[in-house]
Amino acid sequence: MERDWIQVRRDLHQIPEIGYQEYKTQAYLQSMIDRLPQEHLHVEKWKTGLFVLVKGIEGNRIIGYRADIDGLPIKEETGYDFASNHEGYMHACGHDVHMTVALGALTEVVENRLKDDVLFIFQPAEEGPGGAEPMQTSDFFQHHRPDVIFALHIDPSLPVGTVATKPGILFGNTSELFIDFYGKGGHAAYPHQTSDMLMAASAFNMQLQQLVARVTDPLSEAVVTLGKMVAGTAGNIIAEYARIEGTMRTLDPKVIPLLREHIQSLLAGIEERYHCRTAVDFGASYYMVDNDSASVKRFKAAVENTSVHYQEAPISMAGEDFGYFLKNIPGFMFWLGVESPYGLHHSKLQPREEAIQVGIEAVTATLEKL
Ligand SMILES: CC(=O)N[C@@H](CCC[C@H](N)C(=O)O)C(=O)O
Image (tube, rainbow, N blue to C red; front, side, top):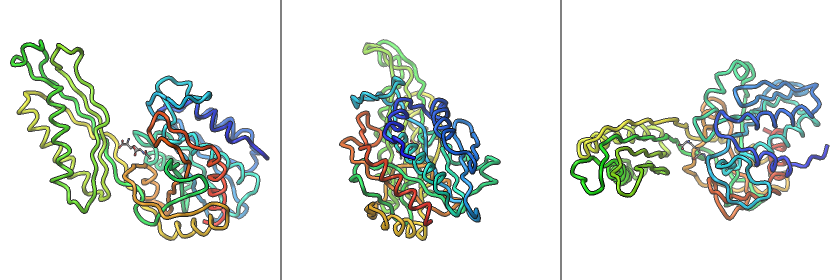
């Protein structure tokens, strides 16, 4: 059956919702699945996500395919006439494309049943606080645990028609970082009577970067980014409170606890120097995406039989909670080229929509051969 996957992607693009708020998204996905012949389908809700099991002809194995479904708190600036209807939120990480490709592959598999069962996983909260780990503890997953699993992520830097991955580590380990600074505010003209939290948070930011320069082994690879800092109320009031939000990424999972330990010690110094109290929360952490070499080999062979071009990918410090699936089940993740002048997490991200059909072709071919 011919479907307009570009329209589906545009519909999903208009309703981005953040982690565990994906109610409209779940309802939209469910409505698309309801239109398919139901005979060999079983749909199970999990929080704001969905499991969709397609029974195969023999059903000796289960192949898992996961698509993440959440959006980001970014104000869209694409100028699309199908831009986000949710002010301040955007599918700026391509999960609208991920879901559309999954629906396309699901439709193919329902219409041309495979030998194996296929479990499609529409997973909430990839951007945080993480859905992959808790989803695996559900009864449904425990009873339909895939033997092998894979997923894709769009890549704005790759041309349309290209997919890329590698055996071994593809994405790093991550840990979020949230710190509140509590001090004493006051008049801009009397700093000696205050403890300035804007200053404390700035000092912490400068010291934090030195951890990567001087604490971690240069060969172990690490990056620490603070993406948000909030402090103060007006130009002539010394800030009594500041908050920073950030993330750390490493290739070696042992480096995350090391960074956390040094952050605690830096904060003890900040408290003493700036006469303040701090509270740190390391939020969610994601395990690295470590691709199984044999599965990558089968993926490469599968796509080489199609019009899709395969190439080897470099390691990325992006984080992906799909790593938690791969911690327990062999499989892999790959990049799908979408050629956008603006990158992931950018308000002008514009994936080329021809990539959707390429994704459907690559995923369907892989489901047949994995
Ligand atoms: C592919 C991608 O962009 N993933 C996100 C995952 C975020 C993990 C977590 N919320 C964190 O910020 O550490 C990424 O930012 O890499």
